[in-house]
Length: 106
Image (tube, rainbow, N blue to C red; front, top):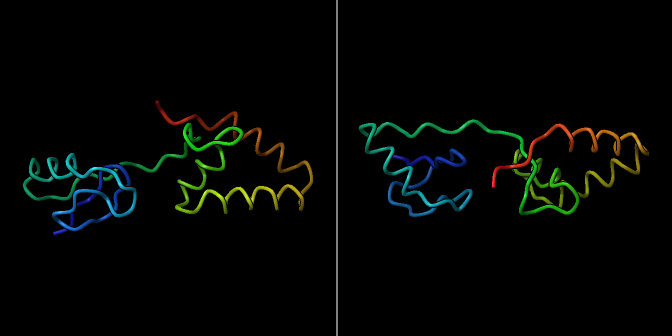
């Protein structure tokens, strides 16, 4: 029976110590599974947040990359390409998103 990560919701082997997707410690997930009589742990809702730890300007690209499960560098390259293709329009979109999307909690 798979063990579901409480942070990202990924299914892991039953006796794994760390999540294969996000690297989070699975002790909490294992405790929740035993509390619910072998039912999978509830997966948390995916939220779009700006990153505090992996940011270059506002953390928006890192937050979007995490949300869409992609590499941060690729997301940053896509933002740069979009800037050159659209001119300053994407810069305005970036600033609006940076103002609206909250930062992840400390």
